[in-house]
Length: 493
Image (cartoon, rainbow, N blue to C red; front, side, top):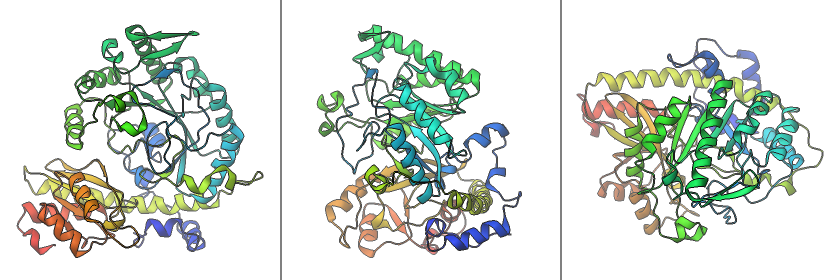
């Protein structure tokens, strides 16, 4: 039996928590509909158990579960031409950026505070702001302190890979089963254009020598993780005219060595950040260039397309950051962990995910049955939960889906400037949104005003809110069937 429609807001609001707890305890999770039983046919059950609640390793899970990064590892052993960790703007999302660095004990307190208030939390990650494996003592102590109090939280690190091989055994002993390695090259000549220097074996190396050492150490670390059964995600920064074509070769190398996912991210190259690439005019890729490269990589290592390039102190669902709510000065010294919210959330979400899985399967079948060779690109305003539940004017990011004869696929996201600020919209902001949505056929949102809807239409983008609060895939399948089937699309608008 399906539950009634559940909004993400209702799942996390304090007001409805007691009701949710009653639902969770009285109904439990039917094995036929529980999200955890909806394992992809080709995936091993043990692997599915590891990724099903991890928002970075499972595209489906990112609709429901949140991550927390604690900034306990500031020291770094390499210099990247796209990185400047001294720059911080609290309103930006960029790897390596933090507002405050923490001690392991402060990190423990922060994790407990977030776990008590953000029931979606499933993953604790250490992604710097330096390198988690180079600043190993702090990384290890943080994990040990947190794991002793919150035993069901997933532990995850992100590393450049230079010092990774030295700590694989300890990672396995601490049950860290998710590791992200940033690998931008397998050719040292290309690597020398990305990394000015590395610090290894107590001395600094530069140029091709540095890139050669880094490459060998990255491959060794990846192979050791694979041998231990630890899942690896490879992050690669796409740098036009530097490594964009070369990432095809990187994809082959990491697949051969057992990488679970390959995440190709766009270079962030704003001169204001003070990075070498930013100051020398190196541009980042367009959304179309990124998608084109990702499409070329299909068939190689499995791709991750829902990455948000998170800060090293990110809090919340992917695409949002609640870090300002959990600065260390707001957290009590003697805080204690209360598991009740997270437990209730997981019980109810398991059923909601089950309903979503069924709806998604039916939607994909509908699209395939249309028998069309054409495709649609749809941008969705969503707060999460797999539903169209965000107002057009309130969204700072659209999730992008492609409907084609292969089915319905999540292919990325488009960040935009929020249109409605204090109840007012700006023409310049709408122009920038339209530019960001280039190539999109349809925009789906919970609500949209006539003015932006008309201006989007003038730009060739159809916007509609008639599917508000429904499942994303269900709406897309209805649109696709109407567009390429027997019913005219106008009947659904």
